Length: 466
Ligand code: FAD
Ligand code: ZN
Image (cartoon, rainbow, N blue to C red):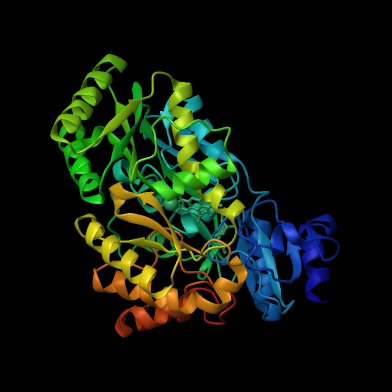
């Protein structure tokens, strides 16, 4: 029997799509990668996923796993050969179990992140992973990319929030590793191999996640700063004063907020334009009054010291949401402005001011008029350091003429400052070649050995990462 017929028999005719408009699965979020799938398959449970993978293994057909298709590195869409199967996990969307005493929750991989957050909140608990795509990205995609987001400073990346996994291997076996154990030293950590593997080793079908108590109060503020050095000083002061209470520290350059003003003028900005703006968030397990006292003391101290020039503390949940909404509108404002050259980089926090000063200057020297959209998770040393065409220059032309040279300049600087060329978005198709150039040969060979061992036929997300 041919593959498509086998798949139809295994998971039902209507879950195997070969015709019509498949762009929802074949085109990536940024509209930079458009592929063509042999078919889009939508299994409904782990056994159906295993059946699909087994059938593909028998036919030597490559598989591209996909969750919410919000990934930013071209890893979630097929190539344009028409030979790769697109395996969508979104029908696996059950919350399987919440264990309140163990502070864990077991979910299907296709659960939307926001619904996982809501299920935890329904038990008065917190699942802290949070990012602007949370209304459409899936927990499987979050784990496959080891997503970061806005709460990493306190709670860690997706990796730190996962205790166990269920995986369909590249040969179609089901590995049930859904443990809620916080300690388990029984050999190699298979879970950690699959987290961050971007669909290149197997298909994540379920996960046991770590929950946290819900904070009693949350405070949010915007602070205006004259320099990046001041932002690093404010971070140190906030860490010293708030300790684990500091749950967010997001940086926004004036040009990033100017793009939001231009494309979303209806969003009021709480402070007048300043060279840099930081969004601070504090979570407190005592009370709102306790939180406010600590927070205001921090900001008053910073004003007196001249670290910040202005601050606005949210007075209500609504104002706090509006502040986060501004921050999260930066990627959307960039989409409105047109394609740019994205760099999701991390550096030691201490090196960030020097990195930005020298790299901004070098870019402006080499590419006159370029505009830098610099924002990100400063508390994690993670910048979204994006390069936009000069005013009046077509974005697509700028990219085709300069993308390679801009990347070389930025990534050389990142390397020189001891940083990473992918902080939280992953490698995918976008950074595959760059990775091979920049990761030590010994490390690349260990990665290839793992790939050969777990996916000997090379069928899992071929052409991505490695
Ligand atoms: P997809 O895009 O569908 O897939 C991503 C990768 O994972 C692909 O390689 C795919 O093959 C693989 N994959 C997906 N599901 C599975 C599975 N079940 N098993 C095996 N492999 C799988 N990321 C951050 O880290 N921090 C941010 O702050 C952040 N902000 C974002 C804001 C916006 C507006 C957008 C659009 C994206 C943002 N991202 C951010 C990118 C981020 O990687 C994704 O949003 C998310 O983690 C991917 O989830 P997804 O379900 O959409 O995965
Ligand atoms: Zn980010």
